[in-house]
Amino acid sequence: PAKNFAMLLPLVEFIGKPYDQVLPPELAQQLAEHFQIVLETGEPRLYEYALSADGPSRFYEARLVKMAQGDVLIMVRDVTDRKEAELALQRREAYLRAILDNFPYWFWLKDIDGGYLAANQTLAQALGFNQVEELIGKTDWDVTPTVAAGFRADDQAVIDNRSSRFVEEIVIDHGEEKWFETFKSPIFDAQGNVIGTAG
Image (cartoon, rainbow, N blue to C red; front, top):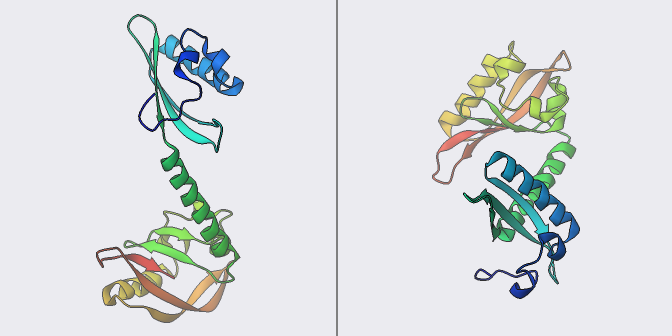
């Protein structure tokens, strides 16, 4: 046992027993598959799994390495804190995505060069994309070339002046030109540098 590591069973109950007799069936099956790959390829394997030992599930990372004599060494570490942080971040992103996609206005974030970092589904669909991910990384020159110069000039003014502004501009909405009132604002990093724009 490692420091602060909750053992599934007392150490004495592991020694000399096949792993499929001491591990839960699903985990034993996963381990058997990874064992086989490591023995056949000689390449190390890394995988994560969840396990409950008289309490809430904890997450573990197992690293399997083939030894010179043909044995397999397994090193396991508890990664519950990291996994819980990842899950919390995923939940937060899901909440933000739900807010953005249910917001009745178009919304976007762009980097300093005008590339889309984020957007809501409403904007993506208006620009002719089925999924937001199709828009990410593109610029206005890629998606609205006829009005891109004006968009870029407005974005640059926000960046240069380090302040928000309202602009009225012509936007192509499902192939039709419409006038829109747009609010644009600079995005700052922790040091106060402008790293993009929001709109």
